[in-house]
Image 1: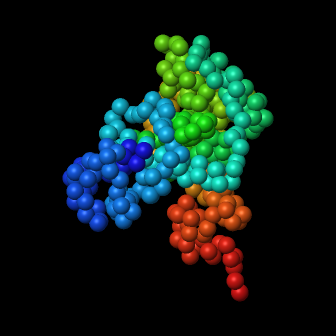
Image 2 (image 1 turned 120 degrees about the vertical axis):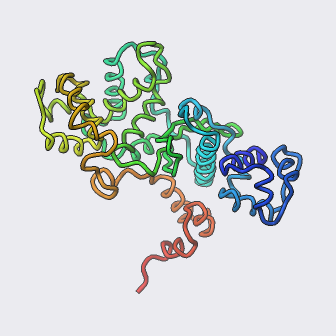
Image 3 (image 1 turned 90 degrees about the vertical axis):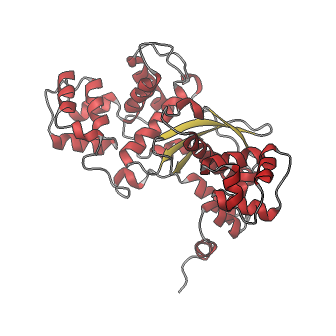
Length: 359
């Protein structure tokens, strides 16, 4: 396990064995690095710490024993991504999940029930079925037709771990199963990029949720990515609710109306226009004209973007892992120094949170 993790971290850093040997302190040879990676030798504790610092990964990541493998992460790799980018994403997910699963073990939490049941499919006949599937999931989760206040919070409530990380440019997000050592069940995780705007982040979360349900389409006329995009749009902007807000069979719509609706649902102006066409509120000709004219630039720059700390932006951050760490600390199951490591904070800041304000 250590050898595999070291090789992954080295690829993430884009270093050869010789380059890594030249940077790590205390010094080791490239031959020693090779033996570490092949499992023929283990480093001393000082070298282990040095490797972690040089490669910018935790010792927990290098020595972790929770995560055996990630399944499905390669399924949605962008064709233009480099091996280094793919290794970086895999390392980010693995390191985050090592910490996540460790805290869950400390608290002895029971696995969450399956949130999808019989909705999971590998066959989609048409787009109307996809709309129906999105509505059925809302019914199963008792969401009604109202806009989802927090996609992040919703997924975390349903037992799906959400990680927000600084992903390489070509990765907006991904979903995969984490295979664990021992008899533990596999764990679902969704990862989103911290570098995307609120609207795009919400859609990416819904898109990755859709990938958990639509495994394949079994239909050459409907590509998988197109199917999950349709599901994401229908889940975030239910057709019935949109029709009630915007009216049926409109011939046109003002910019101000579009901005109100995009902020009502927390989606991009582009995604909203697509939904207006999919639901039949605006004719296809109006949607085509919009993307050829006034909405042409919206794909590159979001009009009137939702800010990070306003509206939906105030709620779209993963909170569960942090809550679990503070709970473990409050129950004295971990020490403050361990909490600081898990939270990526200084020990002093954690201790101030333990004490609370002082006169």
